[in-house]
Length: 617
Image 1 (tube, helix red, strand yellow):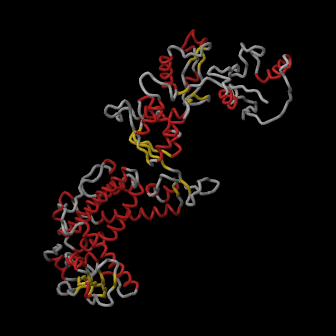
Image 2 (cartoon, helix red, strand yellow):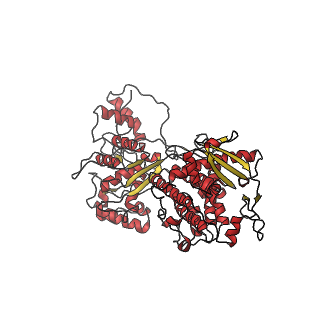
Image 3 (cartoon, helix red, strand yellow):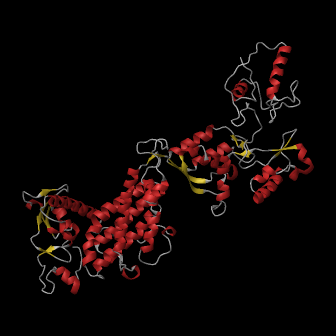
Protein backbone atom coordinates (compact mmCIF):
# COMPACT_ATOMS: atom_id res chain seq x y z
CA UNK A 1 0.00 0.00 0.00
CA UNK A 2 1.50 3.34 -1.08
CA UNK A 3 0.48 6.95 -0.87
CA UNK A 4 -0.89 8.78 -3.94
CA UNK A 5 0.46 12.26 -4.63
CA UNK A 6 -0.87 13.47 -7.99
CA UNK A 7 1.56 16.40 -8.19
CA UNK A 8 4.63 14.20 -7.68
CA UNK A 9 4.39 11.20 -9.98
CA UNK A 10 3.05 10.36 -13.42
CA UNK A 11 1.23 7.20 -12.32
CA UNK A 12 -0.17 8.99 -9.29
CA UNK A 13 -1.44 11.79 -11.50
CA UNK A 14 -3.13 9.43 -13.95
CA UNK A 15 -4.85 7.28 -11.31
CA UNK A 16 -5.99 10.24 -9.21
CA UNK A 17 -7.47 11.93 -12.29
CA UNK A 18 -9.21 8.70 -13.30
CA UNK A 19 -10.94 8.32 -9.92
CA UNK A 20 -11.89 11.96 -9.51
CA UNK A 21 -9.51 12.65 -6.63
CA UNK A 22 -8.16 15.84 -8.24
CA UNK A 23 -9.33 18.62 -10.52
CA UNK A 24 -7.50 21.37 -12.37
CA UNK A 25 -6.35 22.86 -9.06
CA UNK A 26 -3.74 20.32 -7.89
CA UNK A 27 -2.09 20.83 -4.52
CA UNK A 28 1.65 21.50 -5.13
CA UNK A 29 3.20 22.49 -1.77
CA UNK A 30 6.84 21.84 -2.86
CA UNK A 31 8.66 24.85 -4.30
CA UNK A 32 11.34 24.71 -7.02
CA UNK A 33 14.10 24.74 -4.34
CA UNK A 34 12.75 21.57 -2.71
CA UNK A 35 11.30 23.39 0.30
CA UNK A 36 7.66 23.18 1.38
CA UNK A 37 5.71 26.42 1.08
CA UNK A 38 5.42 28.41 4.31
CA UNK A 39 1.63 28.02 4.31
CA UNK A 40 1.80 24.22 4.57
CA UNK A 41 0.60 23.16 8.02
CA UNK A 42 3.14 21.39 10.27
CA UNK A 43 5.97 21.23 7.70
CA UNK A 44 6.04 24.63 5.98
CA UNK A 45 9.55 25.95 5.29
CA UNK A 46 11.19 22.54 5.70
CA UNK A 47 13.38 20.86 3.04
CA UNK A 48 11.56 17.77 1.72
CA UNK A 49 14.18 15.18 2.67
CA UNK A 50 14.69 16.67 6.16
CA UNK A 51 10.94 16.76 6.67
CA UNK A 52 10.49 13.02 6.08
CA UNK A 53 11.18 11.87 9.70
CA UNK A 54 8.96 14.69 11.00
CA UNK A 55 6.14 13.47 8.79
CA UNK A 56 6.53 9.92 10.18
CA UNK A 57 6.46 11.30 13.72
CA UNK A 58 3.29 13.28 13.01
CA UNK A 59 1.54 10.22 11.52
CA UNK A 60 2.40 8.24 14.65
CA UNK A 61 1.25 11.11 16.89
CA UNK A 62 -2.24 11.15 15.38
CA UNK A 63 -2.55 7.38 15.22
CA UNK A 64 -2.45 7.18 11.42
CA UNK A 65 0.81 5.21 11.09
CA UNK A 66 0.36 1.48 10.56
CA UNK A 67 3.99 0.48 9.93
CA UNK A 68 7.32 2.09 9.04
CA UNK A 69 10.53 0.60 7.69
CA UNK A 70 13.62 1.89 5.88
CA UNK A 71 14.46 0.17 2.58
CA UNK A 72 17.02 0.70 -0.21
CA UNK A 73 15.80 0.79 -3.79
CA UNK A 74 16.58 2.29 -7.19
CA UNK A 75 15.54 5.91 -7.39
CA UNK A 76 15.95 8.92 -9.63
CA UNK A 77 19.07 10.96 -8.92
CA UNK A 78 21.11 13.81 -10.35
CA UNK A 79 23.92 12.33 -12.46
CA UNK A 80 26.22 15.18 -11.46
CA UNK A 81 25.52 15.70 -7.75
CA UNK A 82 24.38 12.11 -7.02
CA UNK A 83 21.47 13.48 -4.97
CA UNK A 84 17.91 12.10 -5.10
CA UNK A 85 15.25 13.82 -7.21
CA UNK A 86 11.45 13.89 -7.24
CA UNK A 87 8.82 14.46 -9.86
CA UNK A 88 7.08 17.76 -9.34
CA UNK A 89 4.08 19.19 -11.15
CA UNK A 90 4.73 22.72 -12.39
CA UNK A 91 2.83 25.32 -14.36
CA UNK A 92 3.46 24.79 -18.09
CA UNK A 93 2.52 26.58 -21.29
CA UNK A 94 0.29 24.71 -23.71
CA UNK A 95 -1.11 25.18 -27.18
CA UNK A 96 -4.70 24.06 -26.80
CA UNK A 97 -5.86 21.69 -29.52
CA UNK A 98 -9.57 21.95 -28.75
CA UNK A 99 -10.03 25.48 -27.43
CA UNK A 100 -12.90 27.07 -29.34
CA UNK A 101 -11.80 30.52 -30.59
CA UNK A 102 -14.28 33.31 -31.16
CA UNK A 103 -13.66 33.41 -34.89
CA UNK A 104 -13.42 29.87 -36.17
CA UNK A 105 -12.63 26.20 -35.74
CA UNK A 106 -10.40 24.66 -33.11
CA UNK A 107 -6.74 24.18 -33.94
CA UNK A 108 -7.29 20.45 -34.27
CA UNK A 109 -10.10 20.97 -36.79
CA UNK A 110 -8.04 23.45 -38.80
CA UNK A 111 -5.04 21.11 -38.85
CA UNK A 112 -7.12 18.13 -39.97
CA UNK A 113 -8.63 20.18 -42.79
CA UNK A 114 -5.15 21.37 -43.82
CA UNK A 115 -4.00 17.75 -44.03
CA UNK A 116 -6.83 17.03 -46.47
CA UNK A 117 -5.68 20.01 -48.58
CA UNK A 118 -2.06 18.82 -48.67
CA UNK A 119 -0.58 16.45 -51.23
CA UNK A 120 1.50 13.66 -49.69
CA UNK A 121 4.33 11.75 -51.36
CA UNK A 122 4.05 8.82 -50.72
CA UNK A 123 0.29 8.95 -50.20
CA UNK A 124 0.36 6.87 -47.00
CA UNK A 125 1.85 9.85 -45.17
CA UNK A 126 -1.55 11.55 -45.12
CA UNK A 127 -3.25 8.87 -43.01
CA UNK A 128 -0.26 8.73 -40.68
CA UNK A 129 -0.19 12.47 -39.96
CA UNK A 130 -4.00 12.62 -39.77
CA UNK A 131 -4.00 9.93 -37.06
CA UNK A 132 -1.34 11.76 -35.05
CA UNK A 133 -3.21 15.07 -35.13
CA UNK A 134 -6.59 13.49 -34.42
CA UNK A 135 -5.35 11.71 -31.30
CA UNK A 136 -2.73 14.04 -29.87
CA UNK A 137 -3.16 15.90 -26.54
CA UNK A 138 -2.59 19.61 -26.07
CA UNK A 139 0.93 20.67 -27.04
CA UNK A 140 3.19 21.55 -24.09
CA UNK A 141 5.62 24.09 -25.53
CA UNK A 142 7.54 25.00 -22.36
CA UNK A 143 10.73 23.24 -21.25
CA UNK A 144 12.84 23.48 -18.09
CA UNK A 145 16.41 23.64 -19.31
CA UNK A 146 19.33 26.06 -19.37
CA UNK A 147 19.46 26.67 -23.12
CA UNK A 148 17.10 27.52 -25.95
CA UNK A 149 14.70 30.28 -26.91
CA UNK A 150 13.31 31.82 -23.70
CA UNK A 151 9.66 32.36 -22.89
CA UNK A 152 9.98 35.99 -21.72
CA UNK A 153 7.04 36.11 -19.29
CA UNK A 154 6.58 37.56 -15.81
CA UNK A 155 4.02 35.85 -13.56
CA UNK A 156 2.47 37.43 -10.50
CA UNK A 157 3.72 35.59 -7.41
CA UNK A 158 0.34 35.45 -5.68
CA UNK A 159 -2.14 35.07 -8.55
CA UNK A 160 0.04 33.38 -11.19
CA UNK A 161 -1.33 35.80 -13.79
CA UNK A 162 0.73 37.26 -16.65
CA UNK A 163 1.91 40.83 -16.34
CA UNK A 164 -0.66 43.11 -18.00
CA UNK A 165 2.03 44.61 -20.25
CA UNK A 166 3.28 41.22 -21.49
CA UNK A 167 3.24 42.05 -25.22
CA UNK A 168 5.08 45.31 -24.64
CA UNK A 169 7.62 43.59 -22.38
CA UNK A 170 8.22 40.84 -24.95
CA UNK A 171 9.08 43.47 -27.53
CA UNK A 172 11.58 45.05 -25.13
CA UNK A 173 13.18 41.66 -24.51
CA UNK A 174 13.34 41.00 -28.27
CA UNK A 175 15.22 44.24 -28.86
CA UNK A 176 17.79 43.32 -26.22
CA UNK A 177 18.23 39.83 -27.62
CA UNK A 178 18.73 41.31 -31.07
CA UNK A 179 21.55 43.47 -29.73
CA UNK A 180 23.15 41.20 -27.12
CA UNK A 181 22.21 37.65 -28.12
CA UNK A 182 19.96 35.07 -26.51
CA UNK A 183 21.77 35.33 -23.16
CA UNK A 184 20.35 38.83 -22.69
CA UNK A 185 17.14 37.42 -21.20
CA UNK A 186 18.85 35.00 -18.85
CA UNK A 187 21.23 37.71 -17.54
CA UNK A 188 18.53 40.35 -17.24
CA UNK A 189 17.29 41.43 -13.80
CA UNK A 190 13.50 41.74 -13.64
CA UNK A 191 13.87 45.23 -12.18
CA UNK A 192 15.40 46.42 -15.46
CA UNK A 193 11.98 46.12 -17.08
CA UNK A 194 9.51 46.13 -14.19
CA UNK A 195 11.12 48.64 -11.84
CA UNK A 196 9.36 48.74 -8.47
CA UNK A 197 6.96 45.98 -9.56
CA UNK A 198 9.78 43.43 -9.85
CA UNK A 199 9.29 42.09 -6.35
CA UNK A 200 5.70 41.10 -7.16
CA UNK A 201 6.58 38.97 -10.19
CA UNK A 202 8.57 35.84 -10.97
CA UNK A 203 10.76 35.93 -14.07
CA UNK A 204 10.06 32.72 -15.99
CA UNK A 205 13.13 30.60 -16.76
CA UNK A 206 11.34 28.19 -19.13
CA UNK A 207 12.41 27.86 -22.76
CA UNK A 208 10.41 26.89 -25.83
CA UNK A 209 10.14 23.34 -27.10
CA UNK A 210 12.68 23.03 -29.93
CA UNK A 211 9.93 21.71 -32.21
CA UNK A 212 8.24 25.07 -31.78
CA UNK A 213 11.48 26.67 -33.02
CA UNK A 214 11.70 24.53 -36.15
CA UNK A 215 7.93 24.52 -36.62
CA UNK A 216 7.85 28.31 -37.03
CA UNK A 217 10.54 28.49 -39.73
CA UNK A 218 7.81 29.26 -42.25
CA UNK A 219 7.26 32.59 -40.46
CA UNK A 220 10.95 33.51 -40.47
CA UNK A 221 12.02 32.10 -43.84
CA UNK A 222 9.06 32.31 -46.21
CA UNK A 223 7.61 35.75 -45.55
CA UNK A 224 7.65 38.07 -48.55
CA UNK A 225 7.98 36.53 -52.00
CA UNK A 226 6.13 33.36 -51.00
CA UNK A 227 2.96 35.22 -50.09
CA UNK A 228 0.90 34.47 -53.15
CA UNK A 229 -2.42 35.97 -54.10
CA UNK A 230 -4.97 36.29 -51.35
CA UNK A 231 -3.28 33.93 -48.91
CA UNK A 232 -2.79 35.23 -45.41
CA UNK A 233 0.62 33.62 -45.00
CA UNK A 234 3.39 31.82 -46.85
CA UNK A 235 3.25 28.35 -48.32
CA UNK A 236 6.29 26.43 -49.45
CA UNK A 237 5.76 24.26 -52.51
CA UNK A 238 7.37 21.34 -50.71
CA UNK A 239 8.56 20.25 -47.27
CA UNK A 240 10.93 17.29 -47.55
CA UNK A 241 12.25 15.16 -44.70
CA UNK A 242 12.51 11.64 -43.27
CA UNK A 243 9.51 9.61 -42.17
CA UNK A 244 10.17 10.44 -38.50
CA UNK A 245 9.18 14.05 -39.15
CA UNK A 246 5.47 13.24 -39.23
CA UNK A 247 5.91 13.41 -35.48
CA UNK A 248 8.40 16.27 -35.67
CA UNK A 249 8.92 19.11 -38.13
CA UNK A 250 5.95 18.32 -40.40
CA UNK A 251 3.76 18.10 -37.31
CA UNK A 252 4.86 21.27 -35.52
CA UNK A 253 4.92 23.29 -38.77
CA UNK A 254 1.34 22.24 -39.46
CA UNK A 255 0.12 23.33 -36.02
CA UNK A 256 1.91 26.69 -35.99
CA UNK A 257 0.89 27.40 -39.59
CA UNK A 258 -2.76 26.66 -38.86
CA UNK A 259 -2.63 28.69 -35.63
CA UNK A 260 -1.07 31.73 -37.32
CA UNK A 261 -2.37 31.64 -40.91
CA UNK A 262 -5.25 29.14 -40.76
CA UNK A 263 -3.52 26.80 -43.22
CA UNK A 264 -0.48 24.56 -43.49
CA UNK A 265 2.77 26.31 -44.47
CA UNK A 266 3.27 23.77 -47.27
CA UNK A 267 1.37 22.49 -50.28
CA UNK A 268 3.13 19.13 -50.43
CA UNK A 269 4.96 16.83 -48.02
CA UNK A 270 7.55 14.38 -49.30
CA UNK A 271 8.73 11.66 -46.95
CA UNK A 272 11.84 9.56 -47.56
CA UNK A 273 13.25 6.51 -45.84
CA UNK A 274 16.65 5.99 -44.29
CA UNK A 275 19.83 4.45 -45.64
CA UNK A 276 20.70 0.85 -44.89
CA UNK A 277 23.45 -1.43 -46.15
CA UNK A 278 23.00 -3.81 -49.08
CA UNK A 279 21.67 -6.48 -46.69
CA UNK A 280 19.02 -4.17 -45.25
CA UNK A 281 20.83 -3.62 -41.93
CA UNK A 282 20.87 -0.26 -40.19
CA UNK A 283 24.19 1.48 -40.66
CA UNK A 284 26.40 1.76 -37.60
CA UNK A 285 30.08 2.21 -36.91
CA UNK A 286 30.13 -0.88 -34.69
CA UNK A 287 29.02 -3.04 -37.63
CA UNK A 288 31.52 -1.32 -39.91
CA UNK A 289 28.90 -0.91 -42.66
CA UNK A 290 28.72 2.88 -42.90
CA UNK A 291 29.29 4.77 -46.13
CA UNK A 292 30.83 8.23 -45.69
CA UNK A 293 29.36 10.72 -48.20
CA UNK A 294 32.57 12.76 -48.14
CA UNK A 295 34.57 9.68 -49.12
CA UNK A 296 32.20 8.98 -52.01
CA UNK A 297 32.49 12.61 -53.07
CA UNK A 298 36.30 12.44 -52.99
CA UNK A 299 36.55 9.15 -54.89
CA UNK A 300 33.57 8.87 -57.25
CA UNK A 301 32.28 12.44 -57.23
CA UNK A 302 29.18 14.18 -55.92
CA UNK A 303 27.15 13.40 -59.04
CA UNK A 304 27.55 9.65 -58.48
CA UNK A 305 26.06 10.05 -55.01
CA UNK A 306 23.23 12.15 -56.43
CA UNK A 307 22.60 9.58 -59.18
CA UNK A 308 22.37 6.78 -56.60
CA UNK A 309 19.75 8.78 -54.69
CA UNK A 310 17.73 9.42 -57.84
CA UNK A 311 17.84 5.74 -58.83
CA UNK A 312 16.46 4.62 -55.47
CA UNK A 313 12.81 4.36 -54.43
CA UNK A 314 13.05 6.65 -51.40
CA UNK A 315 9.59 5.75 -50.07
CA UNK A 316 11.21 2.88 -48.16
CA UNK A 317 14.67 2.14 -46.83
CA UNK A 318 17.45 2.96 -49.27
CA UNK A 319 20.25 0.41 -49.61
CA UNK A 320 23.75 1.69 -50.32
CA UNK A 321 27.15 0.01 -50.51
CA UNK A 322 30.36 0.39 -52.44
CA UNK A 323 29.10 -2.15 -54.98
CA UNK A 324 25.79 -0.31 -55.43
CA UNK A 325 27.62 3.00 -55.83
CA UNK A 326 29.90 1.41 -58.42
CA UNK A 327 26.83 0.44 -60.44
CA UNK A 328 25.72 4.06 -60.23
CA UNK A 329 29.17 5.07 -61.49
CA UNK A 330 28.77 2.74 -64.49
CA UNK A 331 25.37 4.24 -65.29
CA UNK A 332 26.80 7.74 -64.92
CA UNK A 333 29.59 6.88 -67.34
CA UNK A 334 27.04 5.87 -69.97
CA UNK A 335 25.11 9.14 -69.63
CA UNK A 336 28.30 11.23 -69.61
CA UNK A 337 29.75 9.43 -72.64
CA UNK A 338 26.51 10.02 -74.52
CA UNK A 339 26.77 13.72 -73.73
CA UNK A 340 30.41 13.73 -74.87
CA UNK A 341 29.41 12.12 -78.18
CA UNK A 342 26.78 14.78 -78.72
CA UNK A 343 29.27 17.55 -78.02
CA UNK A 344 32.06 16.11 -80.14
CA UNK A 345 29.76 15.76 -83.14
CA UNK A 346 28.56 19.34 -82.83
CA UNK A 347 32.05 20.59 -83.66
CA UNK A 348 31.78 23.43 -86.19
CA UNK A 349 28.00 23.64 -85.77
CA UNK A 350 26.53 27.09 -85.23
CA UNK A 351 22.79 26.88 -84.53
CA UNK A 352 22.28 30.45 -85.70
CA UNK A 353 23.71 29.49 -89.13
CA UNK A 354 23.40 25.70 -89.53
CA UNK A 355 20.18 24.69 -87.75
CA UNK A 356 17.76 23.16 -90.26
CA UNK A 357 13.98 23.53 -89.99
CA UNK A 358 12.19 20.29 -89.23
CA UNK A 359 10.76 19.93 -92.72
CA UNK A 360 14.27 19.93 -94.25
CA UNK A 361 15.66 17.24 -91.94
CA UNK A 362 16.04 13.59 -92.90
CA UNK A 363 13.30 11.32 -91.64
CA UNK A 364 15.55 9.40 -89.24
CA UNK A 365 16.73 12.65 -87.66
CA UNK A 366 13.17 13.88 -87.31
CA UNK A 367 12.33 10.62 -85.57
CA UNK A 368 15.20 11.14 -83.11
CA UNK A 369 13.92 14.63 -82.23
CA UNK A 370 10.35 13.34 -81.96
CA UNK A 371 11.49 10.52 -79.65
CA UNK A 372 13.30 13.09 -77.52
CA UNK A 373 10.13 15.15 -77.26
CA UNK A 374 8.07 12.14 -76.19
CA UNK A 375 10.60 11.30 -73.50
CA UNK A 376 10.67 14.90 -72.27
CA UNK A 377 6.92 14.80 -71.75
CA UNK A 378 7.29 11.62 -69.70
CA UNK A 379 10.09 13.16 -67.65
CA UNK A 380 8.03 16.27 -66.93
CA UNK A 381 5.37 14.02 -65.43
CA UNK A 382 7.87 11.99 -63.41
CA UNK A 383 9.60 15.07 -62.05
CA UNK A 384 6.21 16.54 -61.15
CA UNK A 385 5.41 13.38 -59.19
CA UNK A 386 8.93 13.26 -57.61
CA UNK A 387 9.51 9.83 -59.19
CA UNK A 388 13.21 10.40 -59.63
CA UNK A 389 13.95 6.71 -60.11
CA UNK A 390 11.77 6.79 -63.24
CA UNK A 391 13.62 9.89 -64.46
CA UNK A 392 16.95 8.13 -63.98
CA UNK A 393 15.92 4.85 -65.62
CA UNK A 394 14.31 6.49 -68.65
CA UNK A 395 17.24 8.82 -69.32
CA UNK A 396 19.68 5.93 -68.91
CA UNK A 397 17.63 3.65 -71.19
CA UNK A 398 17.35 6.44 -73.77
CA UNK A 399 21.15 6.78 -73.81
CA UNK A 400 21.64 3.00 -74.02
CA UNK A 401 18.88 1.97 -76.41
CA UNK A 402 17.43 4.66 -78.70
CA UNK A 403 20.66 6.66 -78.88
CA UNK A 404 23.59 4.32 -78.20
CA UNK A 405 22.00 1.18 -79.57
CA UNK A 406 20.35 2.72 -82.64
CA UNK A 407 20.50 6.33 -83.70
CA UNK A 408 24.05 7.40 -82.81
CA UNK A 409 25.56 4.27 -84.36
CA UNK A 410 23.72 4.87 -87.61
CA UNK A 411 24.69 8.52 -88.05
CA UNK A 412 28.42 8.02 -87.43
CA UNK A 413 28.98 7.26 -91.11
CA UNK A 414 27.02 10.31 -92.17
CA UNK A 415 28.84 12.53 -89.70
CA UNK A 416 32.30 11.40 -90.72
CA UNK A 417 32.02 10.80 -94.47
CA UNK A 418 29.55 13.29 -95.98
CA UNK A 419 30.41 16.87 -96.82
CA UNK A 420 30.98 19.18 -93.86
CA UNK A 421 28.13 21.48 -94.89
CA UNK A 422 25.93 18.89 -96.57
CA UNK A 423 22.26 18.53 -95.71
CA UNK A 424 22.92 14.95 -94.62
CA UNK A 425 25.45 16.10 -92.00
CA UNK A 426 23.68 19.28 -90.92
CA UNK A 427 20.43 17.34 -90.52
CA UNK A 428 21.89 14.94 -87.98
CA UNK A 429 23.81 17.79 -86.30
CA UNK A 430 20.52 19.63 -85.93
CA UNK A 431 19.03 16.56 -84.27
CA UNK A 432 22.08 16.18 -81.99
CA UNK A 433 21.83 19.83 -80.99
CA UNK A 434 18.15 19.47 -80.06
CA UNK A 435 18.85 16.28 -78.12
CA UNK A 436 21.76 17.87 -76.24
CA UNK A 437 19.73 20.97 -75.36
CA UNK A 438 17.01 18.73 -73.92
CA UNK A 439 19.34 16.26 -72.20
CA UNK A 440 21.32 18.90 -70.32
CA UNK A 441 18.11 20.20 -68.78
CA UNK A 442 16.82 16.72 -67.95
CA UNK A 443 19.87 15.80 -65.91
CA UNK A 444 20.37 19.21 -64.25
CA UNK A 445 18.36 18.46 -61.05
CA UNK A 446 20.27 15.20 -60.55
CA UNK A 447 23.69 15.45 -62.24
CA UNK A 448 24.02 19.13 -61.44
CA UNK A 449 27.78 19.48 -61.85
CA UNK A 450 27.87 17.45 -65.06
CA UNK A 451 24.95 19.44 -66.51
CA UNK A 452 26.59 22.78 -65.77
CA UNK A 453 29.86 21.56 -67.33
CA UNK A 454 28.01 20.36 -70.44
CA UNK A 455 26.14 23.66 -70.63
CA UNK A 456 29.38 25.62 -70.96
CA UNK A 457 30.44 23.69 -74.09
CA UNK A 458 27.17 23.57 -76.02
CA UNK A 459 27.24 25.72 -79.19
CA UNK A 460 25.15 28.87 -79.48
CA UNK A 461 24.49 31.82 -77.23
CA UNK A 462 23.28 30.98 -73.73
CA UNK A 463 23.15 32.36 -70.19
CA UNK A 464 25.71 31.44 -67.55
CA UNK A 465 24.09 28.33 -66.03
CA UNK A 466 21.70 25.57 -66.99
CA UNK A 467 20.08 26.10 -63.59
CA UNK A 468 18.58 29.35 -64.88
CA UNK A 469 16.58 27.57 -67.59
CA UNK A 470 13.44 25.46 -67.90
CA UNK A 471 12.42 22.68 -70.30
CA UNK A 472 13.78 22.94 -73.84
CA UNK A 473 11.08 24.15 -76.22
CA UNK A 474 12.85 23.53 -79.56
CA UNK A 475 11.71 19.93 -80.02
CA UNK A 476 9.24 19.09 -82.81
CA UNK A 477 6.89 16.17 -83.41
CA UNK A 478 6.74 13.94 -86.45
CA UNK A 479 3.87 15.09 -88.69
CA UNK A 480 0.66 13.19 -88.09
CA UNK A 481 -0.23 10.69 -90.84
CA UNK A 482 3.25 10.32 -92.36
CA UNK A 483 4.30 6.90 -93.59
CA UNK A 484 7.55 7.07 -91.59
CA UNK A 485 5.77 7.58 -88.28
CA UNK A 486 6.73 6.43 -84.77
CA UNK A 487 5.33 2.95 -85.29
CA UNK A 488 7.34 2.64 -88.51
CA UNK A 489 10.63 3.34 -86.75
CA UNK A 490 9.70 0.95 -83.95
CA UNK A 491 9.44 -1.79 -86.61
CA UNK A 492 12.77 -0.76 -88.14
CA UNK A 493 14.41 -0.88 -84.68
CA UNK A 494 13.08 -4.41 -84.16
CA UNK A 495 14.53 -5.49 -87.52
CA UNK A 496 17.88 -3.89 -86.67
CA UNK A 497 17.95 -5.73 -83.31
CA UNK A 498 17.36 -9.04 -85.14
CA UNK A 499 20.14 -8.29 -87.62
CA UNK A 500 22.53 -7.27 -84.81
CA UNK A 501 21.90 -10.58 -83.06
CA UNK A 502 22.88 -12.56 -86.18
CA UNK A 503 25.90 -10.33 -86.86
CA UNK A 504 27.10 -11.05 -83.33
CA UNK A 505 26.73 -14.78 -84.01
CA UNK A 506 28.71 -14.42 -87.24
CA UNK A 507 31.49 -12.51 -85.48
CA UNK A 508 31.65 -15.12 -82.74
CA UNK A 509 31.97 -17.83 -85.41
CA UNK A 510 34.77 -15.84 -87.10
CA UNK A 511 32.70 -15.74 -90.29
CA UNK A 512 33.07 -11.95 -90.44
CA UNK A 513 35.44 -9.54 -88.76
CA UNK A 514 33.07 -6.62 -88.21
CA UNK A 515 29.56 -5.54 -89.15
CA UNK A 516 30.71 -3.67 -92.25
CA UNK A 517 32.23 -6.85 -93.65
CA UNK A 518 28.72 -8.26 -93.85
CA UNK A 519 26.08 -8.18 -96.56
CA UNK A 520 22.56 -9.03 -95.42
CA UNK A 521 19.43 -10.11 -97.25
CA UNK A 522 16.11 -9.58 -95.47
CA UNK A 523 13.35 -12.02 -96.46
CA UNK A 524 10.21 -10.22 -95.37
CA UNK A 525 6.48 -10.58 -95.80
CA UNK A 526 4.72 -8.02 -97.96
CA UNK A 527 3.92 -5.44 -95.25
CA UNK A 528 7.33 -5.51 -93.64
CA UNK A 529 9.04 -5.69 -97.02
CA UNK A 530 7.27 -2.50 -98.12
CA UNK A 531 8.43 -0.79 -94.91
CA UNK A 532 12.05 -1.77 -95.44
CA UNK A 533 12.02 -0.95 -99.15
CA UNK A 534 11.09 2.64 -98.33
CA UNK A 535 14.57 3.08 -96.87
CA UNK A 536 16.16 2.30 -100.23
CA UNK A 537 19.97 2.52 -100.13
CA UNK A 538 19.65 3.97 -96.60
CA UNK A 539 18.79 0.49 -95.34
CA UNK A 540 22.44 -0.56 -95.28
CA UNK A 541 23.37 2.51 -93.26
CA UNK A 542 20.57 1.82 -90.78
CA UNK A 543 21.74 -1.78 -90.37
CA UNK A 544 25.43 -0.72 -90.49
CA UNK A 545 26.32 -3.31 -93.10
CA UNK A 546 28.09 -2.82 -96.44
CA UNK A 547 25.05 -4.04 -98.36
CA UNK A 548 21.41 -4.74 -97.52
CA UNK A 549 18.60 -5.95 -99.74
CA UNK A 550 14.96 -6.96 -99.32
CA UNK A 551 13.44 -10.12 -100.83
CA UNK A 552 10.05 -11.85 -100.53
CA UNK A 553 9.61 -14.03 -97.46
CA UNK A 554 8.77 -17.09 -99.56
CA UNK A 555 12.17 -16.92 -101.31
CA UNK A 556 14.08 -17.47 -98.09
CA UNK A 557 16.57 -20.36 -98.50
CA UNK A 558 16.67 -23.24 -96.10
CA UNK A 559 19.68 -21.83 -94.26
CA UNK A 560 18.04 -18.43 -93.66
CA UNK A 561 17.85 -17.48 -89.99
CA UNK A 562 14.40 -17.30 -88.41
CA UNK A 563 14.11 -14.15 -86.29
CA UNK A 564 11.87 -13.05 -83.45
CA UNK A 565 10.32 -10.47 -85.80
CA UNK A 566 7.12 -11.81 -87.31
CA UNK A 567 7.42 -12.27 -91.08
CA UNK A 568 11.21 -11.91 -91.20
CA UNK A 569 14.07 -14.25 -92.01
CA UNK A 570 17.57 -13.15 -92.90
CA UNK A 571 20.84 -14.34 -94.30
CA UNK A 572 24.28 -12.81 -93.69
CA UNK A 573 27.28 -13.40 -95.94
CA UNK A 574 30.80 -12.04 -95.92
CA UNK A 575 31.39 -9.35 -98.55
CA UNK A 576 33.72 -10.29 -101.41
CA UNK A 577 34.56 -6.68 -102.20
CA UNK A 578 37.46 -4.46 -101.19
CA UNK A 579 37.31 -2.19 -98.16
CA UNK A 580 37.04 1.57 -98.67
CA UNK A 581 39.88 3.26 -96.80
CA UNK A 582 37.67 6.22 -95.92
CA UNK A 583 34.23 4.93 -94.94
CA UNK A 584 35.33 1.30 -94.30
CA UNK A 585 32.43 -0.08 -96.31
CA UNK A 586 33.20 -3.07 -98.56
CA UNK A 587 32.02 -1.92 -101.99
CA UNK A 588 32.34 -3.07 -105.58
CA UNK A 589 33.37 0.40 -106.75
CA UNK A 590 36.42 0.76 -104.50
CA UNK A 591 39.29 2.02 -106.68
CA UNK A 592 37.07 2.79 -109.69
CA UNK A 593 38.46 6.33 -109.73
CA UNK A 594 42.20 6.18 -110.58
CA UNK A 595 42.83 9.41 -108.69
CA UNK A 596 41.47 7.78 -105.52
CA UNK A 597 42.38 4.09 -105.80
CA UNK A 598 41.64 3.23 -102.15
CA UNK A 599 38.14 4.67 -101.69
CA UNK A 600 34.64 3.97 -102.99
CA UNK A 601 32.65 6.01 -105.47
CA UNK A 602 30.44 7.52 -102.77
CA UNK A 603 33.46 8.86 -100.88
CA UNK A 604 34.94 10.24 -104.11
CA UNK A 605 31.73 12.15 -104.73
CA UNK A 606 31.66 13.42 -101.11
CA UNK A 607 35.25 14.63 -101.43
CA UNK A 608 35.38 16.19 -104.85
CA UNK A 609 31.90 15.99 -106.33
CA UNK A 610 28.48 17.32 -105.42
CA UNK A 611 28.14 14.95 -102.47
CA UNK A 612 25.52 12.32 -101.89
CA UNK A 613 21.89 13.19 -101.37
CA UNK A 614 20.01 11.18 -98.73
CA UNK A 615 16.32 10.54 -99.11
CA UNK A 616 13.73 7.91 -98.29
CA UNK A 617 11.33 6.41 -100.79
